[in-house]
Image 1: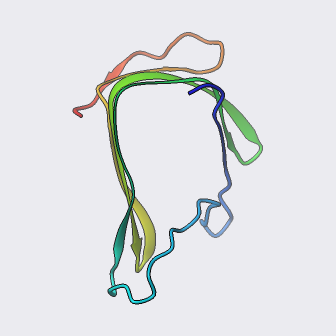
Image 2 (image 1 turned 90 degrees about the vertical axis):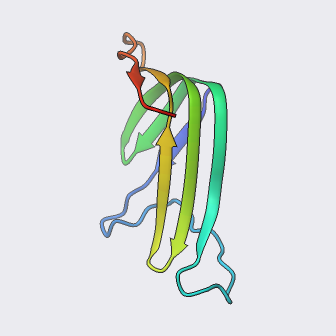
Length: 105
C-alpha cells in the first residue's frame, strides 16, 4: 500500500472519530459483531502518515504473517482486537529501520 493516510481524533471525553458499526436493533443484549477478520502473508506500507491531533507521524512498514481480528461489542460500546505478526520492520520517516520484532502469528 502506497501513501496511506490515517487521521485519528481523540476527544477530551475519550471518544474517537472511529465509527461504530451498525448493530441490528433486535440484537441480543451483549451483541458482538466481527468488524474485520484479516490474514496477510506479506505486507508493506510505503510513505504513509498517521495524524494524531496536530502531530503528523510518517509510516513505513514491512512485515510477514499479519493476522488482525477486530470485534465490536454494543454493550458497553467498545472495540476489541487481536493483532499478531511474525517479522515487522518499521521505519520512522527518513530514519533507519527500527529492529525487527517477533510475535507469534
